[in-house]
Image (cartoon, rainbow, N blue to C red; front, side, top):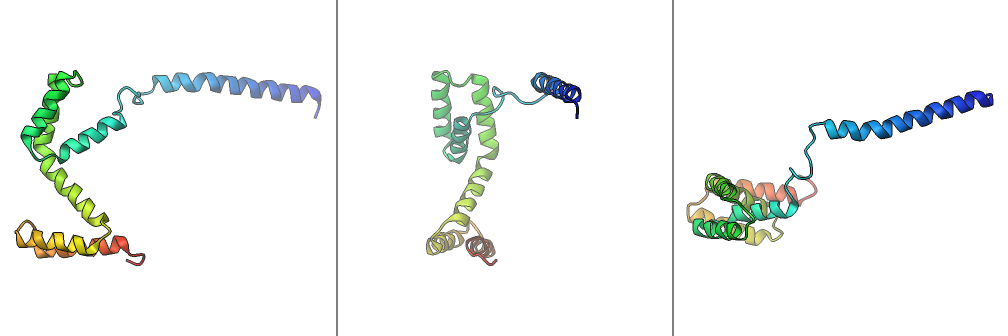
Length: 143
């Protein structure tokens, strides 16, 4: 190859790289991608998850009032959170409890908890059996 061809290829390559370095940020800024300001922060997600596990409505109201007084929430935001809590906290608690039961290490304690739930009429024996079956599958190497 002659020096002239090598120089032309090098200049063309550098021009292409320069265009890509300029074009990528411009296209990324114009796209509808969510910005960092619109994404919830990890700390906020953890707080909301913990709030959903609270069963006492008065305690939720107290926490929301404290957040408003500390100017961490507006009245509108607190109202939306309270509405969401009202509609979903019971379902969320059941799912969180099931996850804890399935991941628990002590099978005897899980069985004891499920036996009490069956005796008190909170769940049926078939449901308890399925939970134990799923837990065994998760904790053994050969399902």
